[in-house]
Image 1: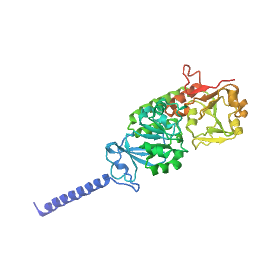
Image 2: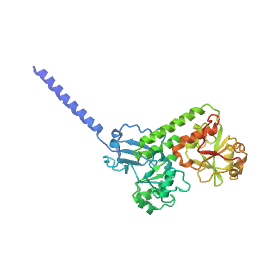
Image 3: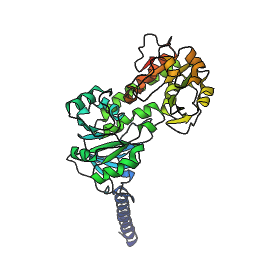
Image 4: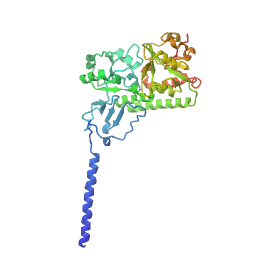
Length: 388
């Protein structure tokens, strides 16, 4: 073998070694765990697991190895959910840890009791706020409160923090509007708190998906998915049934402090009326916001006078028994079309504790709007106010 061939062979071997070293080092660099400034691992370490969040926009979840989850709650706060007995992964030093499944929780909203109903985890509830045992509408909570296994710790405006501390909850679920007044106090007590913001969603199925959010803390995503798939099927069926029909004009408003409170165009209630086939009179009012807004009696009358149906979705404990009783609260509505024709429908008292049943509520609304199309359907979450 001459010297020229020997040199070529040596060059080829050297080049191969260099390329192997470069590629090997590059591969290690790309797959090594990294953390950003907040102590959160980069996406390269997250499993490609479908979290199946289709409608909700106010929370998120990322699945890591060993059934660890990074949850972003309704206040954009990150939480690390680690199975009990499991090990906290490296690179997440700045994120609070909650061990799952939880089995001693404080619920700070009566609506949250319906978010956990499909999960069958009522035994995990150790304490509640705001829930009225005499007028609560979830038997599993009522029975446990009466037996003493669930403790009432006061209204959110006047909580008994000593009592709460003695109950040693693993987690306190609070709503977004209570973060300022409750968050700091829970931190002081060393109680992890989680912000539940289902009411800020602009789609009813988005609000229902907070059942999935709650399921993350119990490792019961399967149960949540099953319930949500059924709800989605109901909504699709109703949508198809009312598609192409002449829409009745629908108004809704609650009288409060001499004014009308109406659900704005960007609210999930507005979307519910739309899905059920109604032409909501306030659908174009503040479409970029959620929740409700106050308007004058005159403004409400001007928009609602020709509405075919009036839906009263009261959040309080009392409901109007007759139309005349309802009119006394705001006499200006007496000559509205819906009132004169007797088409005033009121929500049942348990309506606000039925977030897990919004699909049923949508079907009820469709049956109210199109009685001929839904013959045989029993309206459960509303009742027609007596015309006398």
